[in-house]
Length: 245
Image 1 (cartoon, rainbow, N blue to C red):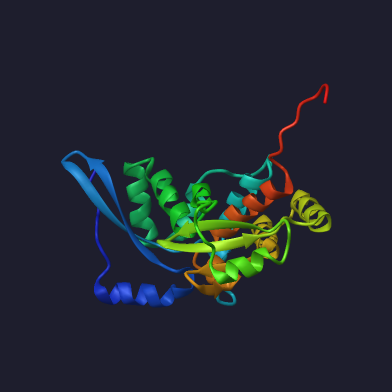
Image 2 (cartoon, one colour; image 1 turned 60 degrees about the vertical axis):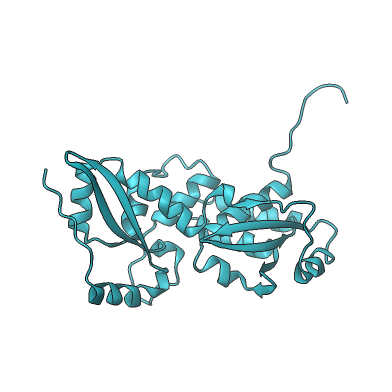
């Protein structure tokens, strides 16, 4: 099977980067096995349309919301296939070329999906507790002092590191979130982002305070990672044992 592999020209690339700037485009390449050895496939990845502030009237796929839904609730009718989300995020090559690649390499969408998760900051391993020996920056110290239950976390996304101070959701916010995601027509990705933003006391990069949009704009998956961390702070991962106490 003959595979067409072509990179955009500098002019085409400039147009794509400008036209899709709101989707934070990023170059990637995928080395695939071939009869002659290996083939290097150039791909321009953008954040999913459902995770972006899209221009008015632009098409928005529901693939991002469906993917987030599968992480937060077991929808019986949720499509966990990665292909729609990956296809929604491919800015280059053209759909016909992309589909021909997928016909040749059936697992290519799964590999691109891994790259996409890393790009958008949705890797669950990206967030961790800083070493106990490390001294927090001044903005983190101030944010920690605002609440006894506030906690310090660090998230590494896209080669950048943000120190976060998170507060557990109160019972009212948690109840509203749990009720909302049960609704069949719930836009789970937005609910998840709202929960993460509500519980984000401060985000600090180096010594500079960043807004939630500074973090969730280029890295929309970070809101999912933070919401899961906040859910843990709320106690969802608590262990129990029936019997004597």
